[in-house]
Image 1 (cartoon, rainbow, N blue to C red):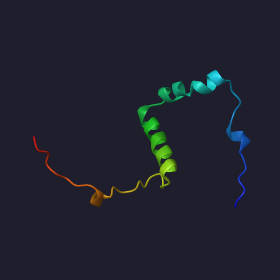
Image 2: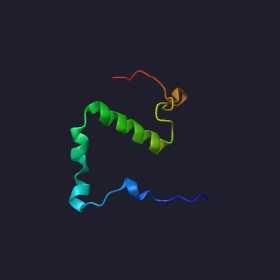
Image 3: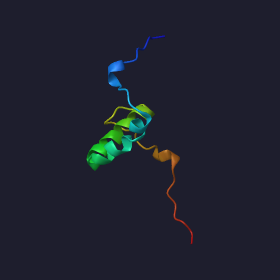
Image 4: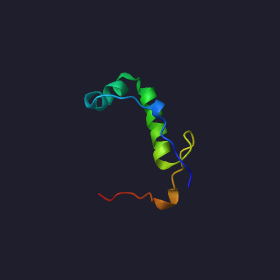
Length: 68
């Protein structure tokens, strides 16, 4: 088991109100930057390289016409 250490320089002390108001920071960013951040967070959550998202498995889906 590897030992992980908390990088204390990456965090800052703040009040609960300051911590809850992080949305204002992201709303101030341009939409392109918010999209880049969302792409990064998805790559971390689903464990794939940031600029190489997994391909859609087309064998799992069928295309069919919907009957009225």
